[in-house]
Length: 258
Ligand code: ADP
Ligand code: MG
Image 1 (cartoon, rainbow, N blue to C red):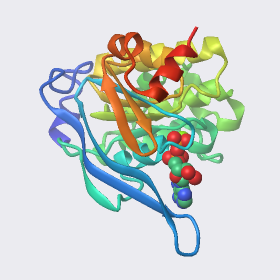
Image 2 (cartoon, rainbow, N blue to C red):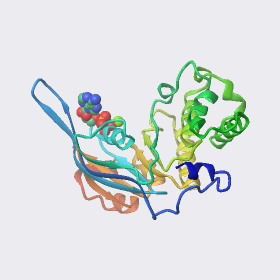
Image 3 (cartoon, protein in one colour):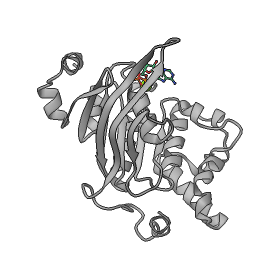
């Protein structure tokens, strides 16, 4: 990882290998249950296998409560599975973008300082840190002058862009997004979807994009994975899934899209 980061200046846009060469995430036989009573447990994930290649975006769709966030948190290393293996070939930890951006930011720290936190391990001179912070903010369409602002001074959409800037200021191999556009109005959601898609291509990141919006999944993803009652019941290219859904839940999802 350190070589990768120090070589970033020479290869700013494509720091990783070309798509398809390497996996960014490997989930093998993941099981997870939660206590649902004094003596009962409910299985939320029942043996999930999923690989995401570097540069590939997989959209994860499924009903509310189907286990999408649990799977994403396991993929992020935030939750430990009961069984199975999670690995991030290449080593560095993934970055996560959540639905509620303002909760993901620290209220009493300026947005510049919060982005700087990710640069600390690089031990860059302060001036270079500042340049990198400004560059990351510009990349997501935020005026770098706002780096001295507190999160409360920004709109919800701007806060979400800041969490994206923080995630990509050191380009990660894997970006995990948990319904990042679900709380946004239509036009902001479209802008943010475009931004994430563009960054994914420029930085050649692997991406897991959780959504209940099949249209958004079709726009951003190379593959759509359908989670139903703890199982991945369908996975394939968007056009294939949408034109010929195999599973009952996918059929109902497809028929609900205008
Ligand atoms: P989704 O994101 O698809 O809506 P979640 O992964 O958030 O689904 O939740 C799946 C199921 O697991 C739900 O029934 C939820 O109540 C349960 N669950 C998630 N996290 C916990 C937890 N920390 N403790 C107990 N139950 C949980
Ligand atoms: Mg969720």
